[in-house]
Amino acid sequence: MKNALQKHNLLHTIKNDITKVIQEIPHFDELKLDLELTCYVCNLIENISIGKTKLDKKTIAIEIITTLFGLSDDETHLLDNQIQYLYDNKKISKLSTFKYVGKSIFSWIKKKVL
Image (cartoon, rainbow, N blue to C red):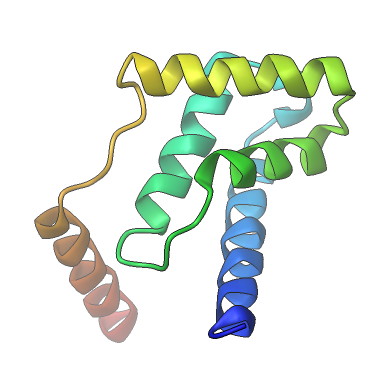
């Protein structure tokens, strides 16, 4: 159970952050099982979890979208297939470490200045 609490906390933080971002989209409830929304969620997970512990990103994406929309078993299976399609066709991309660090520094400076 080494680092189990830290991993659980990280997982909870990622889920909450992404859920808040999705809920800020106007009329997000109309985008149930939309391929573009699924791609957006997967890219958010991929880029938030850079340098973090190993996480099952596919399961996290399914849990987030299920929490937002309350999916049935058939819809969950369809979502699983969508995520696999996006992964197989290289639609899920990771930011380079250089861009990630640059973005982090820029956001830190922005917070300090404003």
